[in-house]
Amino acid sequence: MENITNNLTYLIPEIIIIALGFIIIGIGIFTRIRNKFILPFASITGLIFTAIYITFFFDIGNIHILSTTDHNQMKDLFIYGGLLKLDSFSLLFKFIFIILGIFVILMSIDYVDKHVNHEGEFYGLIILSIAGMMIMSAANELLTAYIGLELLSFSLYILVSLGNDPEKTNESSIKYILLGGFTSALVLYGISQIYTELVKNDIVNPTFFSSIGIYATQYETFPPLFMFGLFLLITGLGFKIAAAPFHTWAPDIYEGAPLPIAGYLATASKLAGIALILRIFSEIFEGSHSSLVIIVAILAILTMSIGNITAIAQTKYRRLIAYSGISHMGYILVGLATNTVDSYTAIILHSIGYAFSGLVIFGVLICFYNQTNKENINDLSGLYKTNSFLAVSITIALLSTAGLPFFVGFISKFYLFLAAVEQDLLWLVIIALINSLISLYYYLMVIKEMYVNEPDDVLAISTNNIEKLVLITSLIGVIGLGIYPDIIMDAINSASISVFIR
Amino acid sequence: MGELSLIHIQIASIVLFSIGIYGVLSRRNAVLILLAIELMLNAVNLNLIGVSAFLDQSRFLGHILIIFIITIAAAEVALALAIVLKLYKEKRNTDVDKLDVLKW
Image (cartoon, rainbow over all chains, first blue to last red; front, side):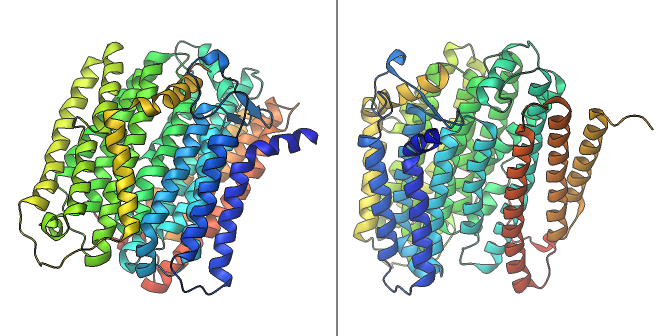
């Protein structure tokens, strides 16, 4: 009993966030607030408080987010008998999830005011989904990870169904929940197969990630039932991060969901999936490495190529961003196939950089959509003339995602591919580079549309101060990390070491 | 009739699971797809309880997993039915084939 209360102090961030979520939902349901700023600012105050708590006051051994890279000084903390693992990896990701949540809430104030009827649910469920992602990044056991995943997914199912276009929203929300339920059933069957195999081999704690690692080291090639379970697990995680061939939901859901939620799905939710994948695969890859590398490499090639090639044909900007996000998951799978500490560092940096660029892209698109209600790429024509700030912001973000120098996308892709080349995966890197070139084409098409073409109507598009604040802050992130990544490299290094070496 | 052993339960479980997958892929009604997903989840439960009862008698891990899975599945179905109801109110049917606005 004493143990439980002791452990509870380490869960204070999650507890604050879940309580905050329920308070916001309650305020939204039981009071009639007509001011559009009260709920979002209440949520943001709580989130900022939690972020500050995690950064400065959350003391577990020596670990802070900005801790040393010396693994001997790190003290990983297992709570609740090892169900949750607190190390610099989980702390870094928790911090980033909260930051992303704050930005998404700030971006969605105007959108919610115009298009969404259920403000309390909107902000409250975003906050609850942050709690789910925090559990996912700290989970050290299959069932805990699954519960975190479902907390995230359930919040997102409802958030997606709050869109403003009835026809599209109905279709996308029903697609999302049916496909999500189907894959979660597949994941559970995978978990039950893995549990069966581990119990047969008399391994203690058969659902822990570390026990799966112990099991995996015993075999050169995995027994078929274990492989089957692993396949189902990969399917579920691949669905979460929208890796091909489990990607088809992403563009449809982005199109029907409220635009800020599409941005949230593209950044935070994918990041949570990546965190869970890194945790699980760093253990499984201990054993028979080569047979799984091929699978992950094939998934990477499929994801990159399908994402990039399909993106060329898109006419709506949400679908374009969806496919470009899919291709980015392909680059991340290249890093996963490499499987070294360096590649893990590169994956974390790449996903953070991608998340910030994605925030800028969606921030600009939300401003644009709020005032024009247009969804096609050629509606963006002449954006430089109607609002140059928005045009320049989205250009920087697009060039960063394309991987041009001076932006974070270049540095992270460079690290990612360098790590892969060092592990003799040159063929994979060449395919990835070709894909990068293809992606440049459709990013430049969007940029050309904004700068070269004339606007359809000379309606000036305005931006308010909050939107400027969000965009400029994320742009500082994108450019600052591109020029001087060392600011965050210590934290990322210590995170990747703590997840990889343990 | 021989003694009931683990393999029988596992076969029953995989059969149930396959029927569930077939149902998800072939049914056109959203509610029936949900039922098929429930079938898959129950196949998982059957597998877990079998393994837990035959191989893992000293601990209750399988039982614990099942309690969580049943709870989560119930929540999921409640949510999904709410969304299906929303669809039905606007379109007057729940045929997933008729949802074809979003493509590509």
